[in-house]
Image 1: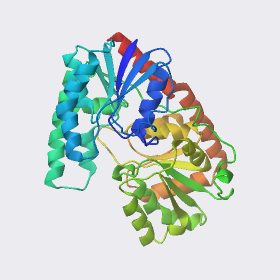
Image 2: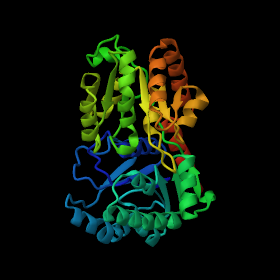
Image 3: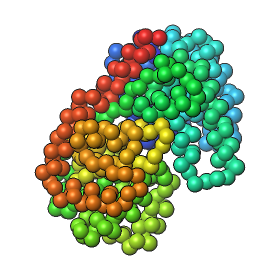
Length: 389
């Protein structure tokens, strides 16, 4: 089968971004039995998709760092440019990740009579509603995104949601038939994310200290501020505990300011963005991991959660669809109520003080991911959906 892949439109020179990880892993596994043509809009040709295969052809499309020019390219030029290129490609099916290139590629797909499958890792409307910003610009963004999302869901031949919550959200907000939406969860690279011995020593960390860790982009909805609020009580009971935050993002400054105010600087470490290949080492250095996301109506993609579990680490999470149900069902961590800071503090302390339970949960976590949540399994489900169109 020949497949055209349209990523979300992000910067593919940043290999640790979730969208890049997702596209890379899916293309890698789809290309084992299919011919792939993928379109990227990055200007950094030397740092793009880390896949070298005769089955993968990479096409570059015009891109500008100027916001106005970028808007014109995406919404005025690319529909025609894509249409011109798509006519030259024999593929009858397209697999797209919802994002900046969706509008133009969907129009071109319809003009060239190709089947269009779009994947969603979350509803943008839900994410915007979590922001405290109440400006006119925010409401304008919500208005525009609602139009784009409705346009996409109605015209697509199939929709893939990464969680049941996202599937229900699409149906509820846009009245899209549930039969049009399939659920295919994200996965983990179980060869890269695996248990690693002596991880603390590899990072020059003290072997005997307890570490609570987070990896990901620092957005408000990630809930890292919950961890900061819980930290003082945890430190009272385990004074030398360390909290390591791996990643960067728009909330980092606010989080570091809050740590300064609470005089917690000695217990927190922000690594900033790191190479994707080093993320498993950090996760293995953690005793426990946290995923404290704030509630979205449609739930969350669980990519980072699977990476934690693949490394054999128990996870403490908030009551969130797609996260807490997985943790509780398989007994591979602890789930706490949203905003329940004392409960969160107690959960972290009790687990840090129970090394046997940490190991037992870790073994179960790895087994669950190996069986159900590898990228290989996810790509296989996507391939079946594309073949059925």
